[in-house]
Length: 560
Ligand SMILES: Nc1nc2c(ncn2[C@@H]2O[C@H](COP(=O)(O)OP(=O)(O)OP(=O)(O)O)[C@@H](O)[C@H]2O)c(=O)[nH]1
Image: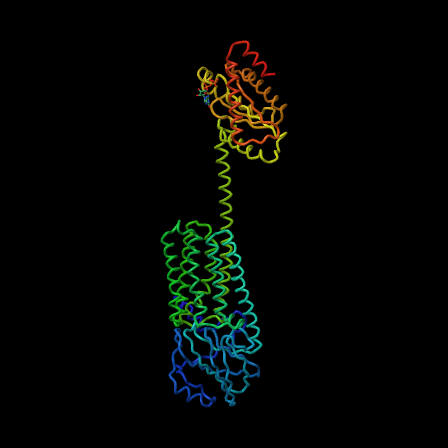
């Protein structure tokens, strides 16, 4: 369908990224056999052509071909560049024949030092007023698109090449830079989806660099025919699991998860097939990349519609690859002539745009994870606060008391920030709560507990009050001996205050046990202190209950 839509564009003028596109003479295709020689002179060309079988087009699955095109000489003399491009091939032999009797034999392809990098290209001189033809012999296990022969002035070619190279290197830099950075982030934070994304970006960079012949041009590295296709076949192996993990499809869409892993497994299995059948390598790579792009694009649209927030930038990212993909795919399948002059470069730029948007998606994901973590932390804090607070009095409960004791025990081995390093535990029990409950009602009993709690919370000591349960309270106070006396006095006063507040049957008993300044206490020492305070409190209670003079004297003593 895409081919049908774009076919008219192919017959119209070719669109170029940089100004005027080059002249594109019509190309005639002929089958070549091994040992076949090109014509020796321009005059021989008609007979040479007549002796050969003309083909409608090349076969995308490769072969040995002659391509012939007339080179229209414009009026002015100029240095010209003939490029044989728009497709993948390793080497091609070009012969340029002129009716002035000239014959130039040239070679184009990868790693040839033509002084114009990145393209199979040869500069030539065409004189005005003469007719020329270029005869090209090319053998390739596959073609990535219909080959094109372009003719342009050396100056125009240099300008285009500079611009195209700048764009190509920038796009490769984006893929490489993002790939390395996100790979580090993924490995460091141990988030598999980031690691997979980093790998994918680097694989894409390697694939495109290899497609444009950079390893051969820069490092003289041998260029196997399936080199770049293998990189592209590997893309779905990491991209599909990346999509599955990033969009959390396991949880949201188990069937889409199975399809994603299926694409990854089939692509991995396709690698040896491509190595064994080089003519199929490019077709396999195209199918692998197309399927993973369509898969990821459709699940991300579904995820966005289902309200999965991290899908936002995902959808935009696939728009970036699908737009050039819509142009290049029908071209790759040999269904149409490329409507754009720089389809491969456009696709590479689409890929780097996709990489940037996916990086945005990752950044957005980090933000979402951070916000979720903050909500979780806040929730935990609220839950701990609720679990450690007594709802009736608002004081800390037994859990809060235990946590505070643990904290003090932990701190006691380090220099204490507390006054004098000494502290006290006071155990307090209200008297007569049951009686008040029974005689005046539960609400009145609650009111007694609240009144006691309110007063305990504002005792004139540095510390905190807790309700341990029922009518039992505790105070942890920090300070020296003097402050312990102040605490004792304040609790004795509270005994009277409760009665002044109208709780006539009430009062309180308490026991206080304190540590010595600078004393190192472990948890068993603290438990012993609490037990001792408890014992003293019961002793106090029984003395208060005793009507004897001894009891009253003891009471007076403790109050002093
Ligand atoms: N109103 C009210 N009563 C409670 C609450 N929690 C426990 N109680 C009651 O408080 C009473 C405590 O009984 P006791 O331990 O005998 O206390 P008391 O009457 O003060 O006697 P002693 O503590 O032995 O001096 C029980 O009847 C509990 O049911 C509460 O939150 N509100």
